[in-house]
Image 1 (cartoon, rainbow, N blue to C red):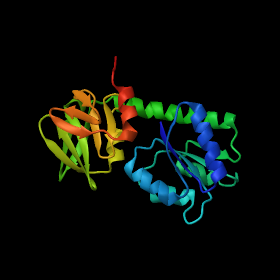
Image 2: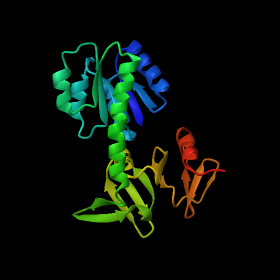
Image 3: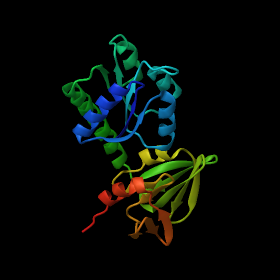
Image 4: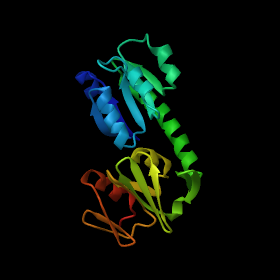
Length: 228
């Protein structure tokens, strides 16, 4: 799971980061010092899990949740247990009180993994998605999608037969595509592994289309291909 930490306290962020590294099951995308920094990350990255402090200046963790139309799984972290009732109104995965112990952290991760596996199974059970094109809703089979390109606030989905412009952030489309078939290779591109023909240096080639592979995404791509 891709995760972020959102906490204004440095000591707390470092502790959670260390526990994430020890878990071996999470990939830390960003450690954020404020809710505003987290919002920027959530707009551009597919985040599966957020470790969120409740008490922060300018915007609290609960105010951040109120501001989001779509949220990843949430594990709330706070120095007080008084917020527990309010926290679970947001359907959070778990609620940790500082200082967080390794055993309690792993318990929370197990809960998050269970939810994540259930969500992934639901996506894998489908072989298509529907997209809204003006007033028309179209069915697009996964095996026809070549790649997805970000264009400002829009996404262009290229298929074997046509292309479709969709008003959606990149991370929202990334979450809806089955992870065994698609991989993000750049801030602006998601590609189909089924249609990937070859990789040359930092370029992925699909039907003569040269797609850049970002340095931060290359290791993710290399792990996904069946390389011998």
